[in-house]
Length: 87
Image 1 (tube, rainbow, N blue to C red):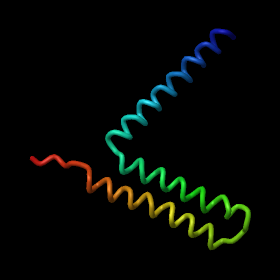
Image 2 (cartoon, rainbow, N blue to C red):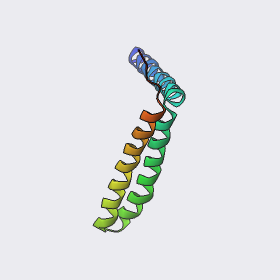
Image 3 (cartoon, helix red, strand yellow):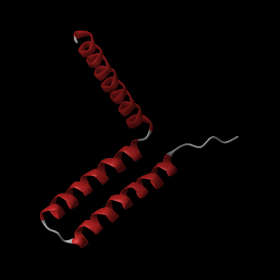
Image 4 (tube, rainbow, N blue to C red):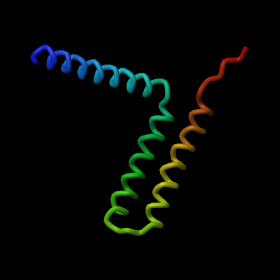
């Protein structure tokens, strides 16, 4: 049982370290995509949390539209700032 728990702990540490490394790489190489994702998450929380308290369907639909719109805009910005190889 101790070996299993030790392996599980090592696996969890490896997953966390890889996730941190991937996040750091993403922050350096894709800042527009990260910014769009964070903004979309904040907007989603700001719309969905109050929408859960009230059963207003229009608020939930607006939240989905805003969430998707932020991701699309972020991808468009990323496409503009990403360098393209010219052969």
